[in-house]
Image (cartoon, rainbow, N blue to C red; front, side, top):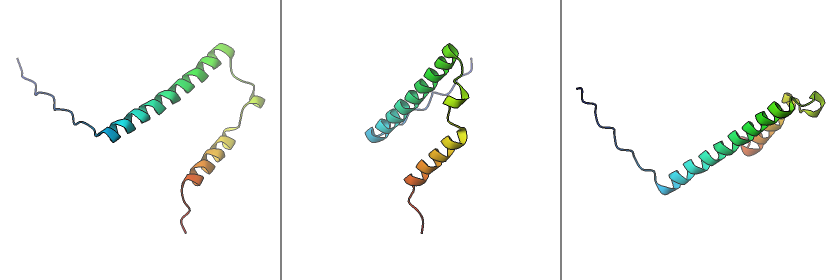
Length: 75
C-alpha cells in the first residue's frame, strides 16, 4: 500500500478575521436566499410584465453612482 502524506494542520484565524469570514458567509447566504426566492417566484408566477421592470441600464447607472459615492474623488 502506498502511504499518503498526512494533511497539513490548518492555520487558525485570529478572532477578528474569523468574525469577518462569518459576516461574509452570512451576506453571501442572504444574497443567495434572495436570488433563490426571486427564481421561485418566477417559477410559480411567470415573468413580470416588461412595464413593471426596471431597465438594466438604469440599474447599472444607479449601481455605478453608489460605487462612485463610496470612493473619494482624486484631485
